[in-house]
Length: 529
Ligand code: G4P
Image (cartoon, rainbow, N blue to C red; front, side):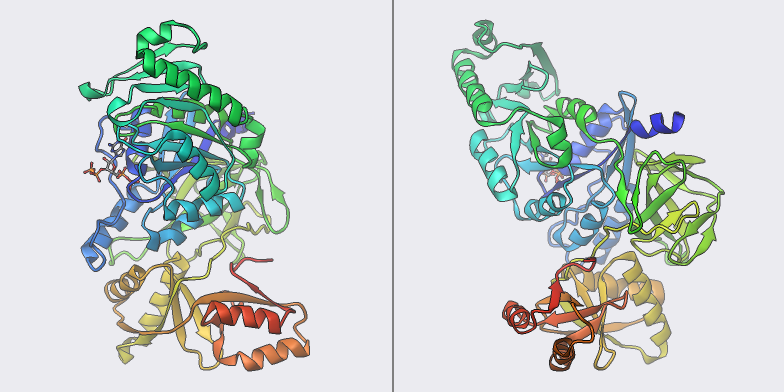
């Protein structure tokens, strides 16, 4: 019974946004409400400062912070909230995609003036593909921004969502007076000029009540009534089932910096957000309430100190409880492993814990046993699905610049790839190694880390590849597939799992290949089965 209750208390989610929309500020305000931190400014931003592309100290600083902010946990209304950190920088988008495999829901933060931005589009698309329940928070209402209805339209169209506002702004920018909370049926007044983050909440279930004019003024009251009429007319009623299926997204408005609209968001979140969800393994669906432990690695963080080459592997617990000093099966290696000091996370501190429950994240010290996507269980041979790789955007040959250190280079590359820093492809033709990344920044990170952590030196050579396509022949013995392999020989490589990949040099070439070899299917994610 205790197991089920503990699991029911958990809410594990991620906050996603384009950089600068206010993710860090919102996270911090949520932690303040949870009593996990005492003052604003305590949560460090994990973003890479502008212009820091070649500043390695900055990258290291960011890595340091991202250990501390990987999981931020706190208790609120007897719920255990786990916020999983997602890097906003586009070069680290792959990290964010992987973290999204470990969340049960997300909050999407959008800047009221900038609207839907590029990075938000990409991340929301991944959430939509996986039907992850989403809540939208439109931030910075204390500033002039877009009209609320225009924004809702933009969110629907650009992000392909079906929204329903659960709060609605009264004015904006200079005229920002507050928010009508459709969910709780009350008004929150904003006292912006005091900057003391005071908010006054007035219960108000009927906006036709003439008292409204006295509280927010005649004009604002008239506007609000008209706006709400439109809201009720145009948008569907909130329906939790639809939200949980990923078919309906509630929207909140507020100002994270001013702590405005954040409590409403959090209160609604703990009410509606999903408890830990069942997860598909290749073998079967695993329910969180099963007694036996299972979990998977979604992130690996290398030690900041090159003298201690251990790493921290982050495990999302899918079912049961994870207990200290208990042998668990590392399914890929078919080996039992015991962990004497598993870390749990609380606010920005990590501490050793004896027991963690489904929904929680534990950090395990690892000396090179784990790869992203690995499954750990109490004994059953399960393999969790859903940590796919997407095609990288950049491709370069990696060359050894110090012949004496070939072994170190190989080891370094292999370990960095296990960590998920980038993807490795080996050309079929000549075994040359190609590194594929989401952003150019990763090449510098890899070069720097190879040198500082493994004592190896590398150089790169550009390669004009447009996309990596994972190849699945309908019939591996067909003449068509044999011809495809012969004709495309120069462009074929193996990924780290040994899967065949076609490195296409243009979208035209992908199209032509698809036409010419209709029975050779090209996939744009690694996990297609
Ligand atoms: P991010 O993690 O999504 O990248 O965004 P972050 O929270 O760091 O916020 C980006 C900038 O937007 C910060 O200003 C932050 O203070 C500001 N901001 C966040 N929420 C609000 C809001 O509700 N209203 C207004 N007006 N500003 C907001 P900065 O100047 O870039 O950084 P800082 O020097 O204030 O830390």
